[in-house]
Image (tube, rainbow, N blue to C red; front, side, top):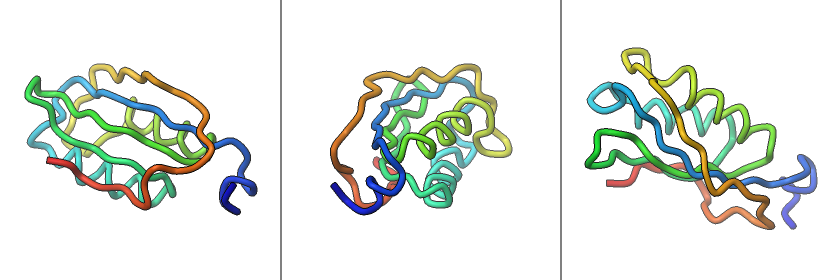
Length: 103
């Protein structure tokens, strides 16, 4: 287990999908910035259905903070109607080295 995981306890992974006005409002860019500030890893991308989806991994407290951001904050001109979280689980190591936007 990495020093990061030992220091902060449990590592979590969660998938998410954000519904509302989340495309064309810099949502992915703000998500990437916020994830880096919070110290979580993963990815974000637009879907054909007009939502934003992705995965967040990191220490449980930081993942929970990112979940709150994805549910309530978003980018300044976005409107979040709802955020679904699924596949939440404990992991033994991070699958990503940073946070990226996928296309």
